[in-house]
Image (cartoon, rainbow, N blue to C red; front, side, top):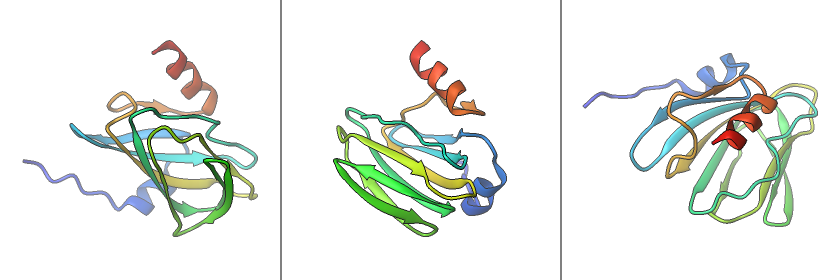
Length: 125
């Protein structure tokens, strides 16, 4: 067995990509994301997939299940499977986070440099 070790805040801060899959296991997946100022993940629902998001830097809004809360460095938001959600950068700096999906949601090793690239990949899947 190989130990998969990440200094996660540093790795996330150093990535300018909208979405980068760092690790994929049989039952979960680790992904880092950078949302530019004024950007968003996009309104979505993951059927059968729980998601936990931890915010490394920046400020934004978590819009989950009809509620809106401010998020910032150190915050964690759990999104149960089947819940409509979106995360919006409301600050002047990138909103940086890492998220764990269970089970995996994206192709192993996927890198999407922009939201537009990520949207194209999701629509072609």
